[in-house]
Amino acid sequence: MDFSLSEEHVMIRDAAREFAQNELLPGVIERDEKQHFPKELIKKMGDMGFLGMMAPTEFGGGGMDTISYVLVMEELSKIDASASVIVSVNNSLVNYGLSQYGTQAQKEKYLSQLTTGEKLGAFCLSEPEAGSDATSQKTTAIDKGDHYILNGTKNWITNGGSADYYLVIAQTDKDKKHRGINAFIVEKGWEGFEIGPKEQKLGIRGSDTHSLIFNDVKVPKENRIGEDGFGFKFAMKTLSGGRIGIAAQALGIAAGAYELARDYSKVRKAFGTEICNHQAIAFKLADMDVSIEAARHLVMKAAWDKDQGNNYDISSARAKLYASQVAMDVSVEAVQVHGGNGFVKEYHVERLMRDAKITQIYEGTSEIQKIVISRGLLDSK
Ligand code: CAA
Image 1: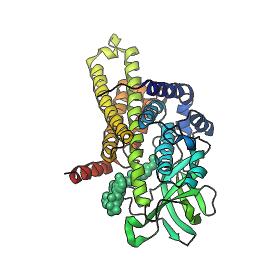
Image 2: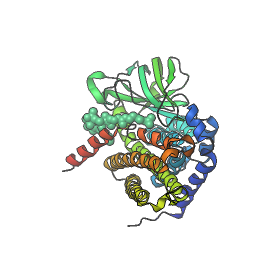
Image 3: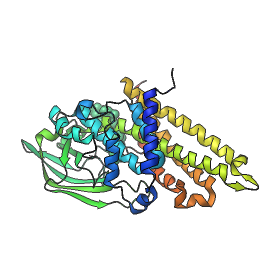
Image 4: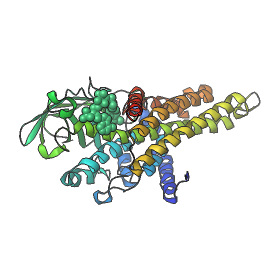
C-alpha cells in the first residue's frame, strides 16, 4: 500500500489551495449574505480547469483521475462550499454523465462547452414529491416520434438559475415504473422552460438553487441520453460518483473548520494562557483530527475504487455518510472552540457549520446512504 500523493497530485492540490485563498476567500462572507455567486468566479474556476477535471481531453476536459478531483474539492470546500458544489455538480453529475453515456454528437455539442466553464450544467432529478424516493418521478416525457414533450417541476436544483444545459430525468412510460424513465439534455431558453424562484437557504448560500418548471417543452429525440428506459440507471450510476464529490466537500468543510479552530486556539488567551494549553480544547482538536483523517481515508478509497474500475457504489456511500457526519460534528466543535467569536460571521466557522448540514441531505440523505450500504452488503453475501 502507498498512502503518498504523486508529485502531480500535490501540484493540483496546491494550485487549488492557492486559488481558494486568493480568489474565493475575498468576498466569501458577502456572497453568503447576499446569496450570490458571481459569473466571473465561475469563469476563473473554468480557466483553472476545475470545471472539467475528469472529462476526456478531446472534449476540453483535464483527463485527470478522481483522486485529483477530490483533492481540489477538499481545498475549495475549506474556504467556500458554495463554489465547490458548482464544481461538484458540473464534474461528477453533468460531465461524467455525458462523457460516460452521451453520444458522440452530444459530447461534441454540449460536453466540450461544459468542461471549460464556457457553459454550466445542472442535474435535475428531485421533485416536490420525489426526493429520496427518486423512482416516483411525476415529470413526464411523452414520446412523439422525433421528439418528446416534457411537463413537470423539478426542485432544489443546484445551478438552477445560472446553468445553460440541464440533464432532466422524466417518466416516459409509467407502466414500466423505473424502467420507463429517461434522461434528457435540455437547453435554457427553450420554449416552455421556466426558471422558478430562488431558494432562501440555511447554508451554501452562494450557490444558486431554484425550482424549474417545464410546460410542454419540446425535446428532440437526439437529446435523450442512452437507450429508451435508461434514465433511472443513468441517475443512479451518476450519483454514485457525485457522492464522492460531496464526501470530499464535507471533508473540506471539516478540515477548514478544524484549521480555523486550531489557529484560533493558539492565539486566544484565557486563564493566563493560550486556550490550546487547556486540555478541554486540546482534546477537542485531537478528536477533530482523528475523525477528519478517518473521513479522508474513506474519501480517498472511494476515489481510488473509481479510478481502478472497481464498483464504488458502497465505498462512495460510506464516504459520504461518514464525512458528512464529521463535517457536522467538527464544525459545531469549531464554533465552540471560538466561543462568542464563533457566533460572529467574520470568523467564518458559523458559515462552515451552516454549510455542513446540506452534505447530509443532497445527493442522497444519510438515510439513503445507509440503504445503499446495507443493500450492497446483504446482496454480496
Ligand atoms: N447503479 C445502477 N443501477 C442501480 C443503482 C446503481 N448504483 N442503484 C439502483 N439501481 C437500479 C436497480 O438495479 C433497479 O433496476 P432493475 O430493477 O432494473 O434492476 C433500479 O435502479 C431501482 O432500484 P431499487 O429497486 O433499489 O430502487 P428503490 O426505489 O428501492 O431505491 C434508492 C433506490 C437507492 C433509494 C434511490 O431512489 C436513491 O438513490 N434515492 C436518492 C436520490 C438522490 O440521491 N437524490 C439526489 C438528488 S441530486 C442532487 O442532490 C444534486 C445536487 O444538486 C447537489
